[in-house]
Image (cartoon, rainbow, N blue to C red):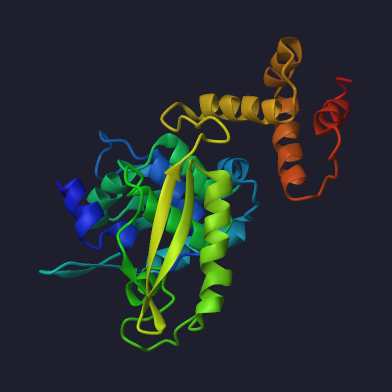
Length: 305
């Protein structure tokens, strides 16, 4: 068993490993984390429904995007290094798409499983949900990083070289051009977006401090303040249908629909439920304009008003 403190705090384990995932790939990654259970068989296959990820994130990924995302994830390597060893690990043993059902079955590669379980141990159910809600891939990675220090007021200080390598903005071997070499670009394109999204959508309020060596910025450190989560956590460990109902209740509450009879009517009707998730997604993506009374519009669409 991998020591939790060593993996998370001292070595470049999965949280601090060098890898480059898109927002779609990170959604798959975090959702997969939520599925892991300690008593899982080593060769267990995890079933992921595309609609479930869409409902949690408010973003739409089509089947082709998912296929391309997992193919790319399977070919990319996690580079994990400490004072004694350097490892290359791959995420998947197998990914199988079930045609016509909108789902995929994933079997994890054996060597990476202990690292993923140790990573999950450092997330609550709420934090996994928060990670899925973030739209920027850099915000997802930075939230993943600062969450390991949530019991402290700050992270450790990361040299900009190390930080950029973790986010795959800089190739340690120098074969690919470095991204955002100008510090103002790094602030605008990476750091400022991450601070805003993490602080607005998660249980942590964060900021960053850029540290100079001589006249040039040389390192970065994040400050962390816990805050009340903007919405209740999704209990990932419950059966899928229970999670769906809990998510639907949260959507209704956000829409201001709290009357017990109306809530019960929506939750007990499969067509209303589908319409609720569709309406919520369209509202978040500005495909529906309803700034004054979105709850009333939803009830009208369902014929309940």
